[in-house]
Amino acid sequence: GAVVSQHPSWVICKSGTSVKIECRSLDFQATTMFWYRQFPKQSLMLMATSNEGSKATYEQGVEKDKFLINHASLTLSTLTVTSAHPEDSSFYICSAPRPTGNYGYTFGSGTRLTVV
Amino acid sequence: QKEVEQDPGPLSVPEGAIVSLNCTYSNSAFQYFMWYRQYSRKGPELLMYTYSSGNKEDGRFTAQVDKSSKYISLFIRDSQPSDSATYLCAMSANSGYALNFGKGTSLLVTP
Image 1 (spheres, helix red, strand yellow):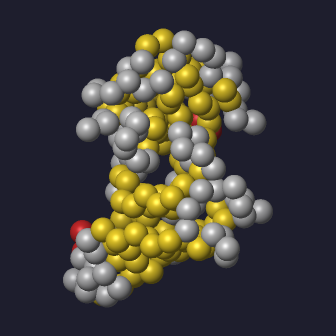
Image 2 (cartoon, each protein chain N blue to C red):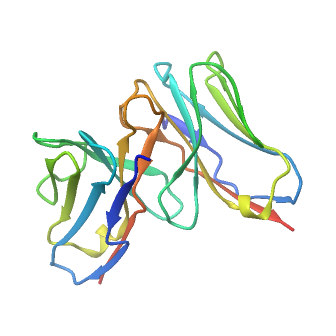
C-alpha cells in the first residue's frame, strides 16, 4: 500500500519550453508532497514542500516562479518546470509521508528530465 | 558542513560478505532514521526505519542508531548480487517532515 505514481518517467524537451510532472497517490490521501531533485552521483535535495489547498514552501535557492507546484487535491501534486534550460536537466522525485500507522515515506519512481 | 555525511564509495564486495554502510550527521534534533535502496535512477525504496537509538533487524538487514555519536549503520548479511544498488541514509527531526539524505553509497556485490 501507500503507492505514489509519478509520470512521465523520462522527458526530453527543448530549451525554453515547459514540462509538467505529475505525482498521484493511488491508495491513500497525500496531504503533503515533497519534491526532490537529484543530480548525478549527488544526494536527493529538497526543492519544495506542497500541502493540499495551500501554497508550496520552497527551499532557499529554488525559484518558485520557475518551478511551479500545484497540490489541488489530496491525490495529485504537480511540478511544472517553466522555461526549462539545460541546467534544469536532472532527476526529479516526489515523496509523501505514509499514512498514519505506517512508517517512513513513499517515493514516486522519478522523472528524468533532459533539456536540449 | 552538510547535515548528513555518507561515503559515496563505490564499495565492492564478494557474494556472501557482510556489508557495513554508515552515515554521520550533525543535527542532534534528528530522531527518525531510514535506509533506502535506489536502483539505477529509480525512486528510493524503503529498507529500514528506526526511531531514536537502538538496533533493528529485518531478515538480512540490521540497522543501528547511535545518537550519542550521531552515527547510523546498515549491515547486510550474506550479500547477494541483487543487493547491488545505491544505499541512501535519510533522517528527519519529526515524523512527516522532509528528509535529509546522505549522498548515497554505491554497492557492488560480485558473484
